[in-house]
Image 1 (cartoon, rainbow, N blue to C red):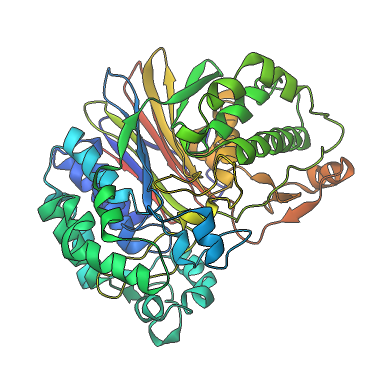
Image 2: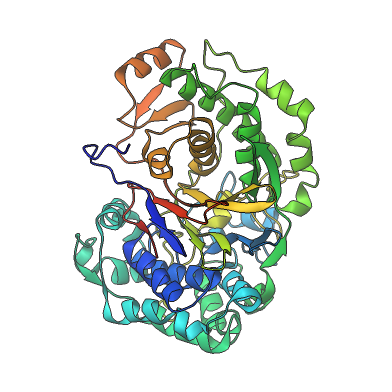
Length: 529
C-alpha cells in the first residue's frame, strides 16, 4: 500500500502509451505527439527538442546523444550520436596551445563536433512517422515566445551563473541584467528557434552544412579552436547504429550502449553485485558499502580502459567475463572501505534523459547532453548554438585509450538503459548525473529487482556515490548508517544538492499496463493515457 502521508508521489499508470522526462513541458509536448498518433521516436524527438529550449544548461542541439530503441517484437539496437574530435586535434597540437594535463571545460578544444542533430535525424529517418516541423513546433514556440523557468532549472542556473558570465555572448542570452532567472520568470531563445526551423526544413544538413556550419566553425576558430567547416560537414552522418552490450541481473537482461559510453561500468557494477545476496539480510549500511566498493572497482577500470571503440576492442567481453568478475568481487571486504580508485578527470554533471513507450509497444531510452552545466559556456552569437564540453574528458596521455586524436570520440558518461526479459523490452530506464550515472543505474535496478520496489519509490530512495576518495550521501541516509559507514573507513560527504535524476517506464508483459516514474529531484513527471 502506498504511503499517502510520505509527501512523495506514486508511480504513474497507463494502459496505452507513456512518456517520462525531467521537465513538465517536455513531458507534455511528448504526450501531445503520442496522443496525435505519433510513435515513441516522434515523442522522444519532440520532447528533447523542447528540453533543449526550456532546460538550456542541461542539454542543447550543440551536444551529443545516445539511444536504445526497441521496436515491438524486434531486436534492441543502440544509436551512438557522440561527436568526433576535429581533424587537427592531436596531443601535440593541444600541448602547443598550452595545455598539458587536461582540457578545461571552457576551452574551445573541449568542443567536439556535436552529434545530437545527426542522431535525431538518423533516428527520425529510420523510425519516425511525423514530419520534423510538427515535432519541433512546441520547442520553436517556447524558443520564440518564451517559457517559464521551473524550480530545479532555476537552482541549477543560479549555480552556474558565475561561469556563464565569463562568455560575453552566453551572458547576454542567459544572464540578462547580470543574473540568473528566478522561478517563474520567462526566458526565450529566438536564434534556437531559427536553427530548429532550419533543421526541420533541411534535415541534418541544416546544421552541419551551409551558412550555419560556416558560422559555428568561424566562431570556434576565433576562440582558438581547431574546428573547420569540413569537420562539421563530416559530422553530418556521424551517428550510427551499433549492437548493445548486456549482462544478466535479477532474471533480466540489462542492455547498454557499448563504448565509448560508460554503460560498461554499469554492467560491471551489476556483475559484481550479483556475486552477493542483496535480496535480504543486509542493513542500509551494508548495501551502501557494497555499492560503493563495486563502484570504485568498476570506475577504476572505466577510467583506465574505456574510450573510442576503435581504441579499446574487446574490453566489454573481457571485463564482463566470469574470471574477471570473480576476481574483482573477491576484493571487496564488507568490514572496511577499500583503497579509493584514482579519479583524475573532470567532474561530469549535466544531462537530460527520457523514456517513451507508444501504443504499439515500441520503446525508446534516450539521453541528450551538453556535459557540464551550460556545456563549454561558449555560445555562437550568430547561430545561437551553445557548444557542449564533451572533449574535456579526453586524456592528454600518449597511448591512453581515451587520448585525444583526429576524428576520435571521447569516453562518454551519458548512458541510456533498457531492461529485457525473455527477449522482449520491459523497461527503458536511465539515470542522469554524469559520473553518477553508471552507479545510479545499478542502485536503481537493485532496488527494483532485488528489493521489489515500485519504480517511483526506487527512484526516490536515498542515494550514495563513492566519488573522489569520499562517499557522497544524501541527507536522508540514516544516522545509524552514517556511523556504521564511518567506522568502516568511509569519508562521508553529505550532499547539499541531489545526486542525479531518473526516469523509467515498465511494461507488464501480461497485461500491457505501463508503470512510469520520474525523479522528484527534478521538475519532471511521467504521463500517459
